[in-house]
Image (tube, rainbow, N blue to C red; front, side):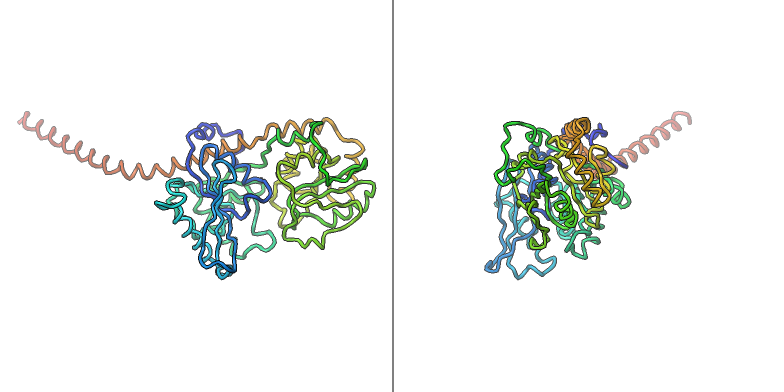
Length: 428
């Protein structure tokens, strides 16, 4: 069944009782692009300590495994396993080594002693699930499925089977997209769709006069067509090249890290600029420069289930937005987002947005962003997790109470028998 952010009153009430520590297994680095995991967990960390466990870093000259711990922000402990390179292709041996390092750190006298007892285990990737499930005496298991990782480039072939295991052992499953919710709901009875949230006030800085233009954005009076986000197999590079060629009087600005793509293969043009990765704090300044905000996604397996976080960020920035026909964008964000179904249609939609930006739709987008806070999402998630903890405890209470009830019934039966015998004696 669907559970939307503001529609579960019981979950919101239970949220006030949630303070369990959380151990997170992530395929993403904490200091990579600031996105769903960081947005959610930084808010969970205001009441619950969070241990963010990343995938290993390999070293050729390392004799023994070690665990690097740091605190990137209050309430968040970042754990990076540093493993010998000989374990790189060892399959689950590396995950076992990571588990050992974590258990040692959590044991008495360890660096994390007493901080993550009986945690909630939270997974962004299914890969460590067979090794990590049950390892920490967890009181609940959460799978926050933000992408269909099995459809991404270089996905391990065993990922599908491990996801089935993780889903079957999860107490609750969250999804970042509606189509993901449709897919995972077939596998588990407690799946909830939580789409994009946004820090509306942060991206509203793009509308402030005092926000400074970044130095690497072209100094020009020409319209700037801008994108920020990860630049990987989900971007339609032919579309980017076509856009730059068809609109030579515009500047196309692409902001973000290049991942799983050879930078030498990116399209090049005098009016096309690849600016690299920027910090989360810098993004409003870049968005301020955009005359049109772009979502130029390829329509392929990797984008079939995505629900881009940047949509509401662009809305909060007050920008006209043009996107390709990503299913969740079409469902959740039209007509504020103009959707194009061909390369030429995309160019035409951008031209229209430059010439006639629709103030009514922009204002509507700003309103949608204000109504979609990460805080409300976290509050509802906390309540749903607390509810699963309650359900887990019920069988244990039943096991304790059953002998008491049986004993009480035996005593009551014995008393009834005595009453019956006594009655017979009185009437004899």
